[in-house]
Image 1 (cartoon, rainbow, N blue to C red):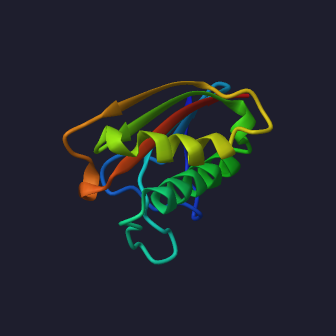
Image 2 (image 1 turned 180 degrees about the vertical axis):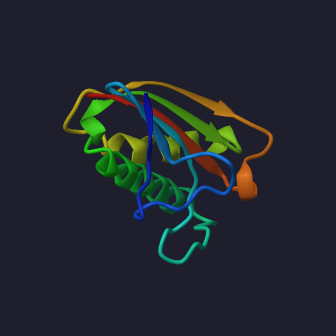
Image 3 (image 1 turned 90 degrees about the horizontal axis):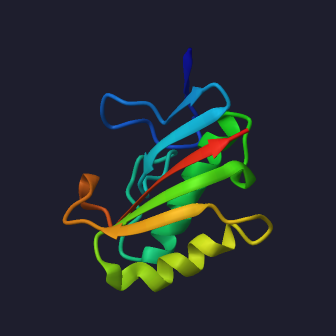
Length: 126
């Protein structure tokens, strides 16, 4: 059986999906963008701030599933432009300083929801 994971510390879905699905011991986190959950406003204009907001949203969803960043095994980062790769990589790396970093791919795409610059999805295992 699968279970929907819902956190008030992350923005509510903007479509017919859940923030995450727990199936057995595996958590599949939907892509998060830089929306602040308290204001529902997009964080834009600074890729570092956007990346921190995305990661804060992810941490909130992980916490709602009673999991942590240490349990993340796979990440996908979608960028509007690879020109942001270095800055995103620097911010992203700060979240994995105290644990083994997950497997990851980073891809540039022609468009993202709400025309944001970054979206990150993850898979975590208990």
